[in-house]
Length: 223
Image (cartoon, rainbow, N blue to C red):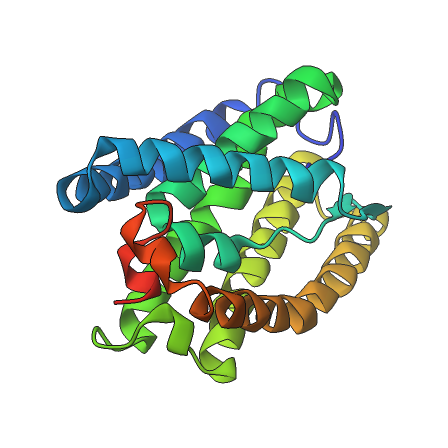
């Protein structure tokens, strides 16, 4: 996931530093909560697994350019449900950094804008999950409607942020608006697939409940 190079000029990119810092501050807050409940080692292990998963999402899974960005199957809600908010947020940021450093250096100037695009919607679905999933409901027992709500919130947030960067950087010309609309329409197809992936992953997790004792998944997955 990235906005196209030069979509936002360097002087305008200053805003991305602030938005990424705000998203990062929330991720740190989630991390503090995680360390209190499961310890630093669990946080580090889950972050490492999430980072590897994000790298696979970016580099291995099919992706194609549409309009102002690329369409990827970035399973933000899946990461949240398996690993928790902080490991998922750090995994998205680190996975994006690994991709930029070793495979797509042309994306590095847009890194903070892209971090915002990926992490801010994750913060949003953390609050949505807390609101729509009862505290006594394990994530493995989620219903399709709940998975769809999380996916729609995350993917919709990604689209809105990409649209924001495109309009902020290039204005409201007809060509730019058309490119934004093309990207948004294509990306919404992911919303149809991600809830099914979530439920399949959660169904698989039910078969290996011993994972809950390892610290490699969030405690909410089974508890």
